[in-house]
Amino acid sequence: MEVKRITAESDLEIAFSIRQEVFVEEQGVSLEEEFDEYDTLDAPCEHILVYYDEQPVGTGRIRWVDDYGKLERICIVKPYRKYGLGKQIIKELEEIAEEHGVPRVKLHGQTHAEGFYEKLGYETSSPIFMEACIPHVLMIKEIGAKK
Image (cartoon, rainbow, N blue to C red):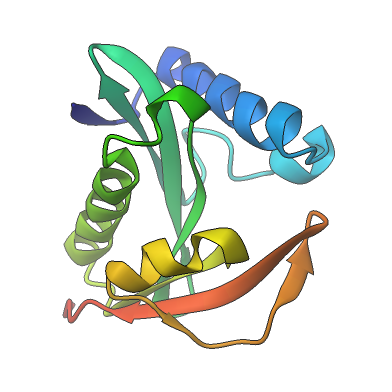
């Protein structure tokens, strides 16, 4: 298992293909909802890829919203969801937040993944809401970074 920060367009395209497979094809999210203005190397965010057996199988990104690092677009292709890779994606995104001096992170977690995020120290801080026709909750974690 390896986590790589994306710095090349070719790696960003790999991340997009993973997101399309998971969110668009598997979960039915529209292309217009899935891809946005933060999907460039120049955007104020950072993207990562996670590899298993040297194959890219997961991705995520973090962007800066107010005093938070907002974790987004976290996904792993279905056959690789049992190897703890999600935890590695979250850990890397939190490390990026700490490097930027951000004291807390948040995410919109799909309700079926709420327990996963709770095990990683996230607390639910909203009622259920719909995003891309999928039930989500806002989850927050204090990471203690200081600028």
